[in-house]
Image (cartoon, rainbow, N blue to C red; front, side):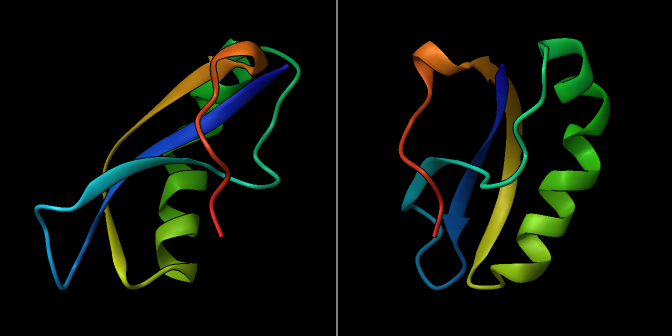
Length: 69
């Protein structure tokens, strides 16, 4: 399993950035995650308008940060 991780910053305070795993964006492998990552990170940002996405990556489940809201 692989998880999509987005690096995001708050719009109000852009110096405050952190990483979140995107709920519902897990895939069976990293290659599938990479293929879908751009679209899923854009969809996450649309639903979480207080943040802006500055990057994303795919990780295996053993190295993931905290989950997004």
